[in-house]
Image (cartoon, rainbow, N blue to C red):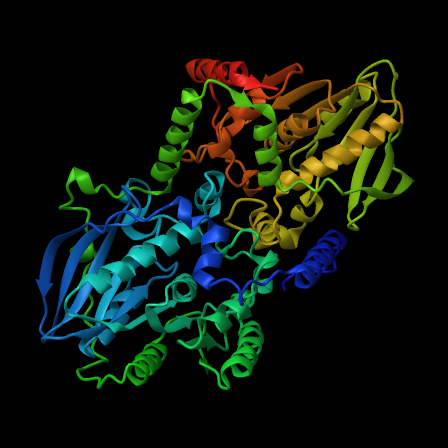
Length: 635
């Protein structure tokens, strides 16, 4: 696991993560003997709530080549979700074995050079090959333009109760349905292959769909522990996954179907380095030998970097030929690049087959939520709060084990360190004031280190007690190594992903900490608490007040009035990755949080999720909606 233990903040964070992971090992309830992997993933990813639509396919054009043809088509996955695809068909009668060829995070999606090269190699060897644009990739980005499908955009799917892993899994299942519907495909010989993010897709769909008889995941296999405190994409994140399984469980359960892992000795992504792969392989191999008497897993190391090289592609083809007993023929090493425009589906598309991106999907879920809530005559407060508590996964058992008072170095201020029952230190900076005035508990979104001298002077001049609090992870996030880890990604990307793997959320953790500090201050006769927060911590403040109601007043600066994803502007600063809460938009979004709160709340400079200022009619419309929700809520 990556970490610079020279930084004490990171060493403390790593210790906490390692401790949580160790606890999950002993607590893990592996259901392998009682529940199929498909059933388990249905439960974990809520797939039964997202049924596949009837397979609807439209062939847009077919391009003939010397020894194969390419059909460009679109097909329906979930209702209203259409996928652009290229189907490579060998010349001849068939039936042929078939391969789902998934792309990774390289440029071009289904039309990228690596994907084309592998598809041509396989089709010339007599395989039908299906290449689709993964969710948010290729033509499936916003406005049908290529974009990175992870980060805040991909994490927005958590907010509507699903995940990038889940929707990709459904797309790939429908892709297998498509292959099985073709009369020239031998449905007893279906395989899957992919590299990097495509290898991730390959492993999950193989574990989920037993129609896949052999698979080759490339530069993509390691341990799930190896994802912690790393910058892997959210498409590789199974929320609460480590409470249930590790990568070795996934690999082991695929047997008696065959998996051949290809890894690179010069891999630059720590989670996929050979040491991580071998750990998962050896544990899964041992389990398969114990159960079956032999193993259906194999691997090969290549002296390569993070790539799907020609040598790796040849190895994958040899593996499929062996497992499918297929006499490979044709000029397998020949590669003739097709221009991407010739493989794209967008130009001839009719309106009925609009290629929707993540923002469209989340918007549709948001509209469904609004329609549902509008139809309700009343909403039961306890039901809403129970659902919120579950989504946040707040730890009600978190307690303070130790209190340490130290000198701050700033006149009139003192430091307090609260050590929690799970061995984390909560850092407070306090200034005692007039007891009759409200105690201001201030939650700076990027920590005390981000507070300007001008702001500190204003806090000092306030005559009441002031308490500044660094919430979980913020001190580690400000270190140079953590900033480098999240370079070109939203802040808290790696930490937010880590907590979700461990079954927690950053906002939920912050809520638990606010509860501890408010209770601590109340024990010191601070009867009236004013919560002051900005940007990301405003959500934690609202969630805390909805659940525990320990504050008398709130002042929220740059509160996002909705978590709906918006197109970002280079002139604005989007919210970071800390804000994502499973199902929060489908639950009612920020408006529902506001509707559940009965104390005075001052909102200054409200924004949207892209950090853009919200003005006029937008504010009024959301205020009316919040009022409508409040009138529906019953005790």
